[in-house]
Amino acid sequence: MDKLQAMHTFVRVVEAGSFSAVAKEQGATQSAISKQVAALEKELSAKLLVRTTRSLALTDDGERYFEQARRLVADIAEAEATLGSGQQTLKGTLRVASSVGFGRLRLMPLVQSFLAQHPDLRIDLRLSDGYIDLVERGIDVAVRIGELADSSLVARRVGHSVREVLAHRHYVRGLPKGLKAPKHPTDLTQHNCIVYNGTGMRSSWRFVAGPGAAEPVGTEHRVPVSGSLQTDSSAVVRAAILSRMGVCYTPTWLFEEEIAAGDVVKLLPDWSILSPIHLVSPQERRHSAKVRAFMDHVAAAFAKA
Image (cartoon, rainbow, N blue to C red; front, side, top):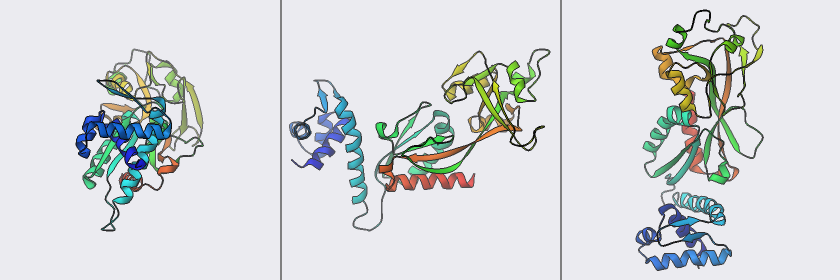
């Protein structure tokens, strides 16, 4: 058995979702493709796929093996792409992860321009506001906003994110008699706060005084907040603010266009937090040309911003 060929076949069967599709790709019979996978399972002494007449499903062992095998097959294809001309052509699939809001508003334009430069490459963009284990999910590079916990990931800082208190202008104009727009972080206890609970700041918001604050620069306040809505979705935060439900404490890029148009306003511009933006990658992907090229592309775009 050609183990490398069997691994490649197994990866393509999982990606394509059928033996027949891979048989057509390789100009082989469906039986031959099935035998390759069966031989690989025998070599590994592990069941990788559960096969029925209508579908394929990975076993637990199959899921773990698939992510490792996929990376190995991609690395070999990447190395082979440099042969002959001596120049590297980026091919295969690059798996990128990001939060939903940042991915849609800030990362997607860079993905588009990167793909335009590398037409033989595919990007699998995974957007989630929850924590993603890069190794377990087979992610090549991810965006992480905030201080990084100690880990084995390779990190590259590419910029920063500004978190401020924002609200729709009509929310401010429509405040009931006796309630005013906040002038100090502690005033937020009187307002309906839309709480994003995807971060550590769930029941309290931390503020740091800037140059224009009435208190010394660097003064910190942690303010307990509450409101009618909390969520782990940045999309829901956007919808709530645009619906004039209350105030939020969020990265300004989530409302970049609305702030520029004057529809969303900054309520405490002298109190904010700067959070670093990192691109992170598993240790085993640090030499990947695709990862390095994508990181360089994103870093260059942020440097111009």
